[in-house]
Image 1 (cartoon, rainbow, N blue to C red):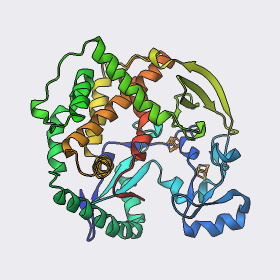
Image 2 (tube, rainbow, N blue to C red):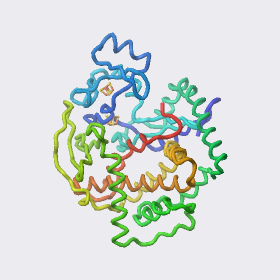
Image 3 (cartoon, protein in one colour):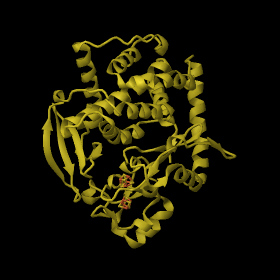
Length: 376
Ligand code: SF4
Ligand code: SF4
C-alpha cells in the first residue's frame, strides 16, 4: 500500500501478475469505448461518422460499434485501426481504478493476457495508471468519501454492526473451503437466515441428493439473472482459447449458445438443457486457483462496495456478515457453475485450466456489479 498526500493506493491485486495482449483476442473491443472530453475533437475531425452521442449513464461521446451491437468499428481482423490514438478507455484495460475510502487498482481476469505469466509487470503499469489519473482520482475521491461517510452514518443510525475488516479477517483462513460444495451450500443457506451468520460456528453438513439439487437450482437461478438478458448482445461474452466470442444465453427453458462474428452477427451453435450441467467442485490444481481467486475477492474493495450497496438496498435490516458472506458464496457458486457449463461444452475437468476458464468467463461481470464507490 502506498500513500500520496491525498489518498492511499492499494496495488496488491496486481502483485505477481504480468500482461501481454493476445493477438486475435479483441475481447475488450466488444465494450463500447467512451471518449474523454479532450479526445472528442480528434475523432470528430478525423472520423466524424464513427462517434455517437450517448445519454446513459451520463451524456458523453463514444466510438461506434459494428451494426450498432458488435465490436468497436475500428477493430479489423482483430486489430485496432487507430491503435496509436486509441482512447484512454482502451489503454486502461484490463485495469480498473476503484475509488472508495482508498484507491485500489483491480485487474480484470477476463483478459486472457494476464494469465500468461509473461509481458509487462502489472504493478508498474498500475502505478503509472494511478499517476496519469491523479487529477480525476482526486475529484472522485472527494465525492466517494461523502458516499462512504453517509453509508457508515446510516449503519450507525440503524444500529448495524459494520466492521468489514473483521469480516475479511474471519474469511481469510477459510478461503480453501470454497473448493467444497458443502461449504458453499451451508454458507448460502446461513446467509439467508434471520440469525447473524458466524463463520466460527457454521456447520457444514455433507449434502444429500436433494440438497445438491437445491444448490444446482440456486446456481441456475443466479445464472439465469446474469445470462438471461433481454437482448442477446447484452449477455456476457466468453472469449475462448481459440478466440471465439461465445455467448450463452438463457432463453425460456434452455441455454442457447451463439458465436458473435467479427462482422457483428450472431451465429447460433447449439442448445443446452440447464439440467445437463452438473455442478462440479475444483480438482487438482483447480483448488489452488479457486482459493487464490476467492482470496482476491476477499480483498477487492469493489466486492465489499457491492455488499454495502446491497445493505443499503435492504434498508440496513440485514446483518452485514450475512450479506458479505452471501456475496462471497454467490460469487464462488457462479464461477463454479460457469466452469461447469464450459466443462459440459468443451469436455474438460475443473482442474487448473477448467477453473481458470470459469474465472475468465465470470470476472468481468463481477467487476460490473453495482458498488458504492466509483470506477474511473
Ligand atoms: S482482453 Fe486482454 S488479451 Fe484480449 S485484446 Fe484486450 S487486452 Fe488484449
Ligand atoms: S479503438 Fe481500438 S482498442 Fe479501442 S475498442 Fe476500438 S478497436 Fe479496440
